[in-house]
Amino acid sequence: MQWFGDFVGLLPQAVVVAKMIGERIRMPPFVAEFDRTSNIGRALVLTGDDGVTGFHLLQQRIAAELRALGFEKLVDPDYRPHMTLLYDERHVGDKLVNPIRWWIRELVLVHSLLGRTHYNLLARFPLL
Image (cartoon, rainbow, N blue to C red; front, side):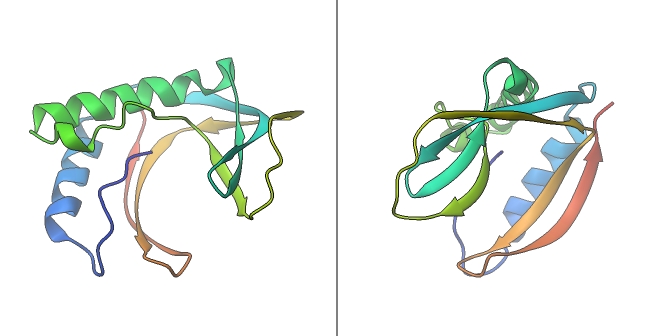
C-alpha cells in the first residue's frame, strides 16, 4: 500500500518511519472485495470498485501520517488498490470475475527484497 523506495539493503530510517505510521493508524477492520482483472504496466492485477473503499480509507490515513511527519513526496496521488497476480507482456484488460472477499484485520510492514520476489515480515499492526 505504501512504497518507501528501492534500496539495495534495508534502510533503517524507512523502517522507523513506517513503524511510527503503523502504530498511529486507527481504523476498524474491513472487508475487501476484488471483482475484476486489470493491467498496471506489465502486471495482471485484481481490483474493484466499492469493494476497495476500505483500502482507500487506509491509504488516506497513511498519507496523512506521512504528511504529518514531513514525507509528503512519498504520498502517491494515483493510489489504486490492487493485488498483483503475475507479470507478463500480454495485456488482458478489464474483465469481471467472481468476487474474491476477505477481512482486512491488520496492516503489515514487509521488506521486499529487490528483484528477488522474497518478502521479510518486519511488523504487524492490528486494525482496531
